[in-house]
Image (cartoon, rainbow, N blue to C red; front, side, top):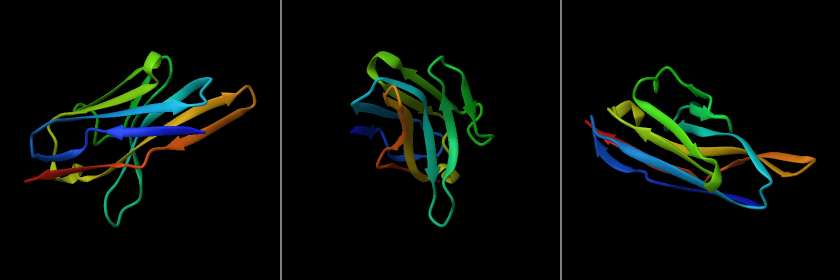
Length: 120
């Protein structure tokens, strides 16, 4: 089994910053893509940013220029530095990871979510 443990969410004023972390643990042979999605009340889950094992990144338009995704492969951890936060960034943020558990078993795992609330 693989677990993703998220941390770093909270309440912040508009213009402030937060850093989310997500650490994967368990039976892990290799992790390919890792990243963050978010879901606001009444809306669909949407991609925020993701990063390959080689460090290539992809951002949603809404995150470009304000958020930075990074990872530490040795720690199986992905980070999301969020700056210049806006009230519309308020959502539950979910970490995901594509984990190779054995040579023939690759699965996508999700964290439980961490709430980010930005006040105006």
